[in-house]
Length: 352
Ligand SMILES: C[S@@+](CC[C@H](N)C(=O)[O-])C[C@H]1O[C@@H](n2cnc3c(N)ncnc32)[C@H](O)[C@@H]1O
Image (cartoon, rainbow, N blue to C red; front, side):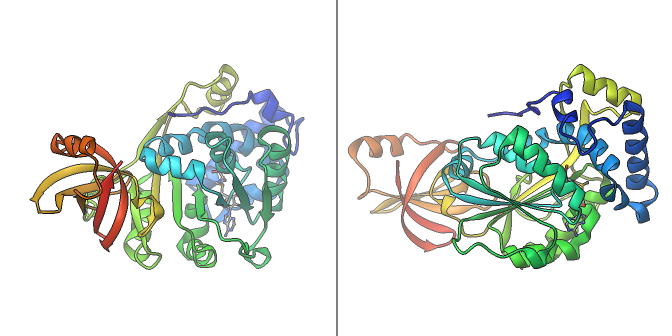
C-alpha cells in the first residue's frame, strides 16, 4: 500500500486544536521551546505536555509530519502479516499517544478493519487533543483513553494485541515501557523514535535485555539472523521518511528552520515467537533434499528473520501442485498451510 501521507490540511487540523486561535508566532515560539527541551534541557522534557498552547503547537506541526512513518514501516512488513492484521480483530494500544498520531495512522492504513483503540498518555491535555481529532477527523470506531495504568484493565475478550510506542520510549524510559508491556502482554510491539544514535542505543539495549523475556522476535528492520553489526560500532541504523509537504506545512517548517521533508527515524517491529501467521508466505532459501514423503526446504517466513524447515508433503499435493513443487527455485515465495508442527522451526505443510 506504500506510504500514506497525512490526509487533512493544516487548517482542518488547526480548527480542532485545544487553542484554535493560536497565532503562527505563538506556535513557532512554543515549538522552539519544545525543541530546546528535547535536545538540550532534557530535565524540562515533559513540560510541553502540560500547557494547552504547547500541546496545540506540537499537534499542528509534528502530527502531520510524523504520521506517515507508520505506513512506511507497515509497507515493509510481509504481505501475509499485513493481510492478517487487516482481517483480525485487534486491540491497538498507543502508549504515550500524544495527539493520537499513530492510532490515526493505523486507522488510516487499516481503514475497514475491526480494531479497537486504547490511547494512553499521562497528559490529560494530550488525551483531550486526541479526542478532538478522533471525533472530527479520524472517527476511531471504538476509542478508549487512559491517563495511567491504574485505570487500565485488560479487556475480557482477548484479541491479539498490538502496542505502539511512538516517540514515547525516549521520554518515559525502559522501566515504564516494561511496566506497560507486563500489564498488556502484547503480541506485537512497534517502537518508533527520532533517528538519533542515542535512541538507536536505547532501542537496541531494550532488545538485548528484554526482547527474550517478552518472547519477542524482530520482524523489522533486521534482515539477518544473529547480532546487529552496528551495536558494537560507532555506527547506527535508521530509516528516513521523505515526504512531500503541503505548502503551508513547508512554510511553517521554514519559519522554524526545521526541515520535515526528510526525517530520520528509527522504527522497530517485534512479534511474539509463536503466531498464527506462521501459516502463510515463505521465501525458499535452500533445498535440503527429497524423502519418500516430502520435499524439504529451508525457508524464511515472510516478515521475519528466522529460518525454518518446511516439508512439502506429497500426500497433501495434487498433480498440479506436485508439478509446481518440482519447478520451485530457491528465492521463490510460496504460500503454505500447516499440516503438522514437528517443532517451532520444523513444519509439515501443503502448498496452496
Ligand atoms: C513526543 S510525544 C509523542 C506523541 C505521539 N505518540 C506522537 O508520536 O506524535 C510523547 C508522549 O509520551 C507521553 N508520556 C511520557 N511519559 C509517559 C508515561 N510514563 N506514560 C504515558 N505517557 C507518557 C507524553 O505525555 C507525550 O504525550
